[in-house]
Image 1 (cartoon, helix red, strand yellow):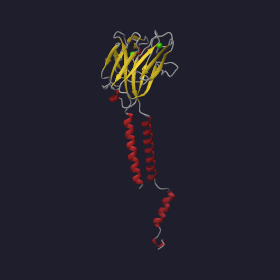
Image 2 (image 1 turned 180 degrees about the vertical axis):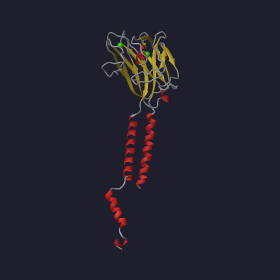
Image 3 (image 1 turned 90 degrees about the vertical axis):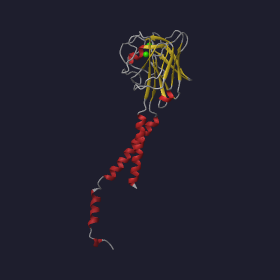
Image 4 (image 1 turned 135 degrees about the horizontal axis):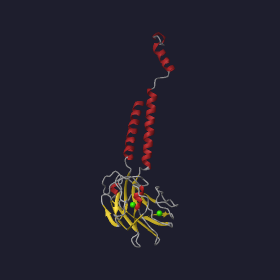
Length: 265
Ligand SMILES: [Ca+2]
Ligand SMILES: [Ca+2]
């Protein structure tokens, strides 16, 4: 009976571990780097450049103000069914010329007249392995504080580019105290449109956009359950395989070596 229980526990643990291993392979990201104009030097990224609040390589370079890209590559460089289209003006953030994070922030979108910046991403239903977050990177040259409203559907975020603060190597998620990234959480839409606008004359901007899927909490629960079950199985096996205590061995030996005549008939 104990052997059967061990077998069942081991099989369940193995199945849970396999599920967890598969889910752990799920993290997924697609990055769009808005470049601006082709003559904005050092704002186009090489696929090997790793950048972002959630660091990734293979950023898709999005050139121009009103344009689109098809079959975006993911963070492993694999083509997907995801497309992006955007409508805006272009501008440039004069920060240190370094590959990676700095280069991500250099080229950027700006409002086209009085219209908001719009970025539409489609095809995520077939590409993202689950609910995803959208990270919007924003930073413009600004002497005064600049407040931008970002909206996806009915979900609204406020991003504040603090007065006199330009990117200096650190991404800060704006949760109310200013920063250079806002995050929309847990989207499941196949297609979404991001809109960004602010008060007239303020340097509203979208420097880059990243779609990111992380393993869900349930996955972590499965991982923990699998690990706990494996540990329990190993402990029981170790206990069963361990040699009997010396005193018990002696008692057993005594029992086996007693003359038959001592046994009651
Ligand atoms: Ca950019
Ligand atoms: Ca700034």
